[in-house]
Length: 274
Image: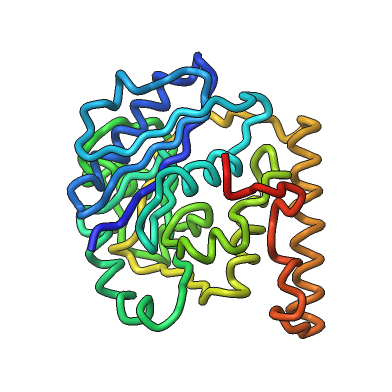
């Protein structure tokens, strides 16, 4: 069974070339793993000329306001316009995948997926320099070098983070809860908020298996934590996460009776449309 892999892409003109290089590294690491590549580009710049030769590509260009960056809206547009499979993989353009990632993921969870909707995130290692390569082993070698040649699989000696904004998502549940919360304009908390909301309807799994670990290509941070938009975004996320945790985790409210609390973008009457 093929699965759609969705990349959300929105960058300023001076960031496009570097972003495309990282995007190709990610695509090349997964394109031969029984997937369909989907790219939603909400930048002003159309990147079709760079990606048009990707086999079986689904591409949608829909410019939205480039500042502040709206990752949440870009993902939502991509799911609505491009994703066709019952489950899809959400991916940063900066993630490089091991050679058998999809096969291992599906073999491990295919039975569970047939019984219930699930949300699965895996772990990621962040290397400390920009390494542009199509060979996953090059990244593994860099990880080992950074950690004085300690083995990539050694979880006790090498710290891996949860790649909370990526991984396997059940499309029908995504649509039901109206995807990512588009009130969140920048980074910090939007993935945690989405995962908490979808976890009330899906079994949420953080999988640390070393064969499912991805590597994040280093790139400069493109936002300032002192930025007012960033601070507002962070405040919104924390407030909504705290509210949901108090209501459904600490107070044991029944989710079916208060389902509206986990549905985002309720002020958008025609959310299903672009």
